[in-house]
Image (cartoon, rainbow, N blue to C red; front, side):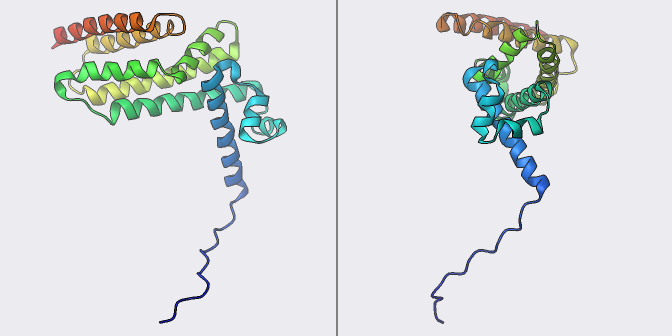
Amino acid sequence: MYALAVPLAPPAKPPRTQEQRRATTRQALLNAALACMLEDGFAGLTTRRVAGRADVSAATLRFYFPTRAAFVAAAVEQLAIELLRQHRERVVQQPAPAANRLESWLDELWEICKGPAFNVMIELSSAARNDGDARDNFALAERALTKHIALAAAGVFPDQIADPRFRTLIDLATASMRGLAMFLPVADQEQLEERWNAARTELVRLYDSLL
């Protein structure tokens, strides 16, 4: 057999539809919005910065998100999706041995609370005091995140989740983490870890008492 002098070209891909192109552009804008928030906080969520990062014009951004409220809502939804992705990867897809399951689960959630995505959630909660759009969007993101944490807890602790005392324990744990995470920008990190370890010890003690 003779070798071909010119390699065969790969088959041409069918052209994308207008709907597919729009979906790609919209997702690029949301990814850019998330990147801006992670780098510079909620204050970084500006039309100019997001459009520039997505390599589109400000007019294009306004085409997809005609109002700031719509833009903020979509950006915060993207932030919630990122937090849920982190939660699934760190907590759900890496199950710990039964002997230290609660400790590992709490520590993974604490690592998420120390990350930049959760820090944006804290900034958004502060902005919600004086911004109606921020308040509505924060409420949506908060409900989505809380629901997913509860679903994850049900998967990790199927025998305990029906106990209302255990659900209260989960609420107490997440509230403790969020409260401590608010001090991350100003607190001594070693002292903050010590405070978390002390809180975790008490949470584990409460958990053992339920069993």
